[in-house]
Amino acid sequence: MSAHDDDLSRDAEHARAALTALAEAPLATPSFRARLKREFASGEIERTAALRAATDTLAPHAPEPQRPHVVALPRRRVGEVWRWVAAAAAVLVAGYGAVGLNAGPAWRLVSATGQGVATVDGRPVAMNHVDELMAALAPGARVRVPAGCRIEIASARTLAIQMVAETDATVPPVPGRWFRRDVSAEIRSGEWRITTGPAFTGARLALTTPSARVEVTGTTLAVICEPQGTCVCVFEGRVRVGRDRTDMVMVEHGHRRFLFVDEQRAPESAEMRPAEAGALPAFQDSMSHEMSGGR
Amino acid sequence: MLDRARRRDPEALEAFFERYFEPVHSLAYRLIGERAAAEDLAQEVFLKVHRALDTLDPGRDPWPWLATIVHNACRDLWRSGAYRMGRRSDSLEDDTARAERIPAPAVGPEGAMLASERERHVRQAIDRLPESLRETVLLYDYQGLNHLEVARMLGIEHAAARKRHSRALDALGKLLHESIGH
Image 1 (cartoon, chains in turn blue, cyan):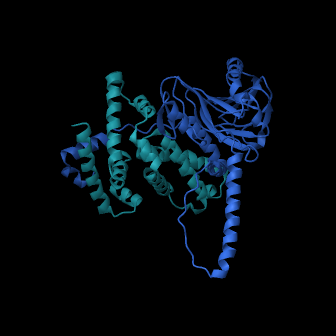
Image 2 (spheres, rainbow over the protein chains, first blue to last red):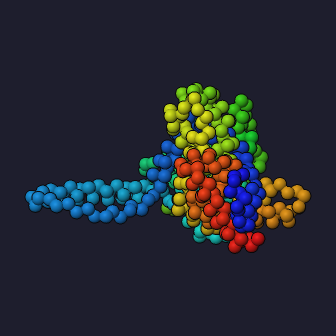
Image 3 (cartoon, each protein chain N blue to C red):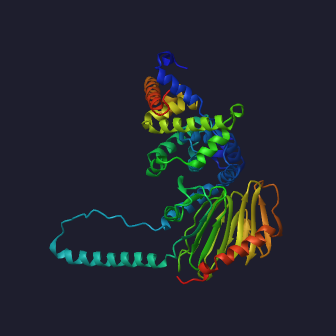
């Protein structure tokens, strides 16, 4: 307390009391803390940030209009300059055209079930405001699905994701048609069910969780982030799973691999969870139209 | 430990993280008042720390340096358009989080709800303060720093920190009077 405390007005005294009564800071999510600690100690934090920055760069941006800059040139050089301008413009148009044509089918909100308020990039969006939710679910957006709710998104013939209740994750970019086929996303907690379509062939989705790295190259699987670790259940195809790039192992269909947050504990392999054995084929069936439909 | 952390020794970095994660996260939460944003901010702070490990002085307490990084990152967030947009509507998830941690078993669920509602009003009033006043009250009255520490962190004179704090309390008191009416 300082000397001027005695001179506080009545309102100011109330303000101080209100500030003092504010709740203590809550503890951070254990899985988030564990992941950040691992990334900080290993130096992966910088690589992850670079990956995120690259992902942001890949996200489609509208070119900002540039203010024209007029330079006086000798008349005989004007023709030459115009040729260069035309060539540069052609390259730009071709570049934008190629990037535009390369872009895979955009994410579409297939369903948003349950009543509640999702959070997208820290902004609350009611689950029943479908248009708003659809607009917000762009590549790179961080989504939190409220309790009792579920969100399903799909990119036609490419990839479908079901985010179950209480999932906290980022939406991945859709793989390009010819280049930029490797995409990544992060699941902080909760569960994703994923199925891929024919247009995903040759692409790769790398998922990071607080305790695992999962590389999807075409399959149907579930990635479940629990406080103790990450469980990857593979219903169809094969998935590479590991703590990081250096210790990836292949998980075959019908099996699961569990990686503990506690790195002292060895990963465990077993048959896939019975709950997923029912949920994954149901999800795959429900997405069959999206995955087989035309672009 | 700091010397080894500076050389990016993984064990020392782990120890550094263990020592400073909670203070960083707690300061971030107190400045922002939102659980998810505080985690994002803590992540950003540790990224910046990792990038700047070469400049870490093993002979000095790193906390003032860390606190300044938290504060600067928070300022950037306050000034971002996305944050301003987000503050226009309050997140129900954060209300739930607040309600969960209100330690008021004696007053029952109704009392906890009232406390949560009151905290929401206080947070909204804090958000309406100009940035320079907001950071002063949060650092002094909520984080518990003294005027000298606040002045150092904000890069202002000791007397200016005191004056700013006084103005901030007055302004916050008026805003609370308008919203809660006490």
